[in-house]
Image 1 (cartoon, rainbow, N blue to C red):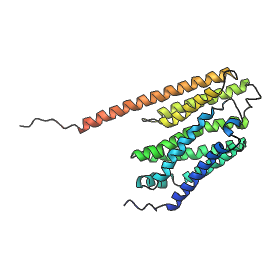
Image 2: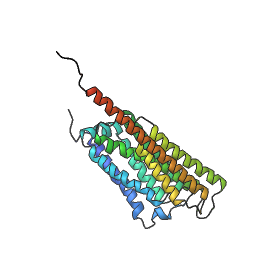
Image 3: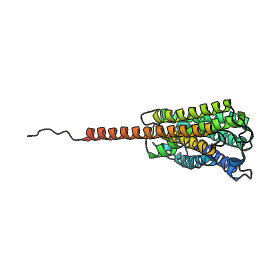
Image 4: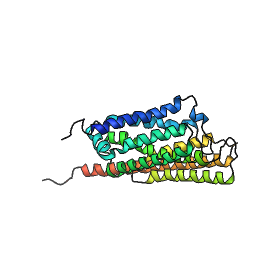
Length: 274
């Protein structure tokens, strides 16, 4: 019995409300007169403003998610699996964006950790207990939360440097700043590699989210500001791209092998008949 679309209706309504709250918080950062992407605190890990365009893709996919929850397949993974974690995530993310846009960076960093924790929990539930059973599961559940998970990893570092790092407009990059930025870039690149090879099929969307961000950091951190940080970002961005391509190639080979094996299993047994 597939059940009615009204099953779990309270949670479905909550998901819709929180989604639009979350969407509205990000629209505010664009519509505000302060233009936060150009006037916020500048650090030595600040990416180019176009890095934040990934929010648009995440919002578009999550819009599909809240529609998909009304289907039988969507209800199983979103309502029964993710459950109230999604409204919690949307609420935390809206608070984080508001704090970040209003330049309360220490509080924003705290909520960035909360957001990362909430996304990680959803990511674990989806990957561990809800393997994609169809295209809807893959595109409207696994894909958005993979991108979300990779992107929030980047946001934690961006917000941490905004909260505790030096202002790149007024202070040159000292030794400790360069070391901290290098370690942050190294961690992000390593995380991208981990995503790409974390499972037989890998998690390329999460890896791509980090790779995109590393190139944005490289593009924004001018060589005239700090050549070390500029070129380090490029090196780690290129390495991250290599892991993405290797992961893609490995996934393609495994897919081809799987298809060949499946075709062989389906091939008719040839026997002699007299």
